[in-house]
Amino acid sequence: MTDARKLLEPVVDDMVRLAAELVRTDTTAIPPEGKETPGQFVLRDFLGAYGVEAELYAIDFVRDSGHRWARQDRNYAGRMNLAARIPGTGRGRSLLLNGHMDTVPEGSGRWTDSPWSGAIRDGRLYGRGSFDMKGGLAANFAVACALRRAGVRLGGDLICESVVDEEWGGGGGTLAARLRGDRADACAISEGTQLEINLATRGGHTVDLVCSAGDPSRFFSTAEVVSPAMHIGRLLGWLEGWVAHRRTIDRGSAYAAFDDPAPVQVMAIEANRLDLRDPLTVPLTATIRAYFQFLPHEDVDAVLKDIRRSLDAFCDGDPFFRMHRPEWKDLYYPPLIGHELPPDHPWAACLTSSARAALGREPVVGAARYPCDAFLAHREFGIPTLLFGPRGAGAHNPDE
Image 1: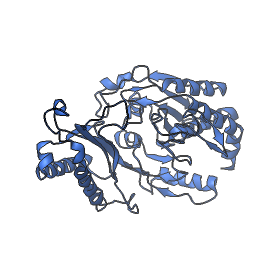
Image 2: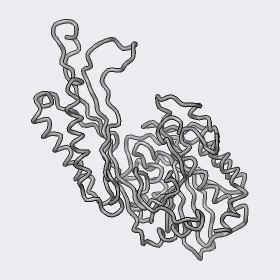
Image 3: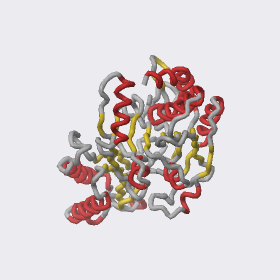
Image 4: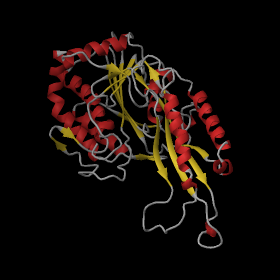
């Protein structure tokens, strides 16, 4: 491990500069589009300065692949993955380091600096994507650069990849990489984990419950208008019931110690906007965006069927929602599923030993509080996968 530190030391400053430059490059994805490719160019140029060859490749073939996780509602034209391979001697096992280039938008909250500032203060890098996950991306590719600089050749191949379309339940970039044949004996994804080793991830699904009622032509004219916004609180109460129920499920092993193992969260509520450019009027539509998470061992489709049956029963028993039933609109489909690597797996033991030596303490080994692309590598393509990434905060929020 001392040798690893010595290998990385000459590239640390450049790694930080790369992370900052990536943050300054807007690689936002808003479905169905994404503009990740400028960030891939930044990464390719950085690798070139170290003599590391990188391949940029189109992923639009994934929509016609017939794979069940290929999302047909995404546009992949012009969105490119990047991969760099450091060949080994053939006497060892191969390792894949995965990360995503896309970020969520800056949002409507107030930032101290520009979301694309890449500002560094008190040893912290700020900006959209700094934690999720351009810091992890920079670290992944710094490993390849350090090896190339030192002339070290590993026993097995090292593959570093920067993929697109991870946010918004995507997975298109990672799926494309696996379908084109980039495989390895083990995979590490450098999502932010606070330097913890995460052997499991949750699944997740986001749905909009849209309730419409009333006739806009009647407002201020022939009759009072009944608004669904007056009744939406009862729908929130139904969701709160699911919050309580999900805390009672079989937690399995990875999430056994979690107070809330499979959260149900309200992501947004919308009726009329508080904007004077919109006239004062009664909202005729009210929407709740709900987010359900699932444990690795669960049958996600079966759980969602139970949720929808429960919603039907709630509406049947409510006079308003019986007449104005909410429409269920999936934000993406199929839903994400979780994954779990056993603690005694050789890859888990290997990284735990390495982290112990690098950190000078026993590493925390646990489970992620979010879904990501890990299930694609682990469950769909049989590559043992775990998460290990940097400290940080504010993912998907101002002043990330």
